[in-house]
Length: 387
Ligand SMILES: *Cc1c(COP(=O)(O)O)cnc(C)c1O
View 1 (cartoon, helix red, strand yellow):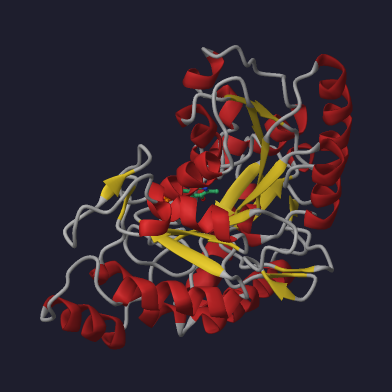
View 2: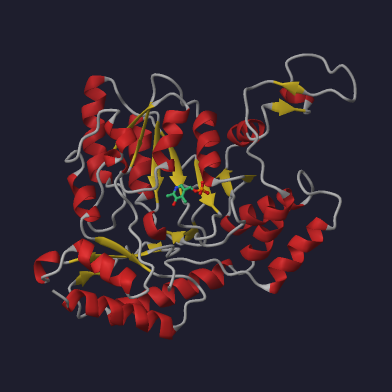
């Protein structure tokens, strides 16, 4: 089976992890701050906070922004469930904005229209989560301008997008958002096994997220509410969690980060090769905005179903039968049973649902070779011709 995604672990990665195992600290040592500093420097952010997953990063990001009961969080329906669940964790309500049919990202025009309506009914969102689907950045300048006008805060869910750029700057620089989140799950661009990070240029948000990732407990007298009893003293000043990243994970991250630019370049080269090889087939290849350099976490094609005699499901099944580990990113979140029970219905976000009816993620990972890619292309060709 050719998988849809796969990590690349080299001897240098293994060596740094073994070094940590032989060291004094398996957690709360020097590696986590080293990884944080390296990522912050790489993308041009002031603060970076490593946590045990992007889901945790989204949670502490929402809490730091003050999201709570009575508030709304808006995001795209075409994303992993975590981009929406973080709002529910905080007791807020979640709503969605339909996608741009060209980029498959949250559509700034649909966002603007929905905001104008929400202003009338007094239900403006407190937080908007912009997801850079497949690695392609959202139109952040437009979303930021709407944020200024309607008073919401912005989280970039850049789980797919580390190493990519928007308007010539690395994603994570935070020019158009409050907080950016990365995921280091093994299928993502670089990995720490499980792991995530929240980046911000705002000192207060960084300090709050730092507190929340580790029980809400501090040893910093500045954050304490009363006198220090003695050198043993710590204080719990918020209800936090244990969302810490381990030293083993951070060491792997430091080592992987050195290859980030190479990974993204390889992914882009493979994507370009797909674009060229699929040109004659009845599929829509991913359109790229000229402002963006995508991290290319995923390569999603849309089937032109009126041009073929096979169904979406038949093509998907045929590819799996031929040993091609295709996938579908994503089932629109509002159609999930949990969200249906909150009142969402099929038909609520038609562009997202139309995308879902046609999309297939083809295998793409940095160690994929041309022979493997040719196998995927041949299998796709065959599955589209079958009837
Ligand atoms: C993978 C992913 C997440 C969650 O990442 P974890 O590190 O597995 O928690 C969140 N949002 C998006 C868009 C993702 O792809």
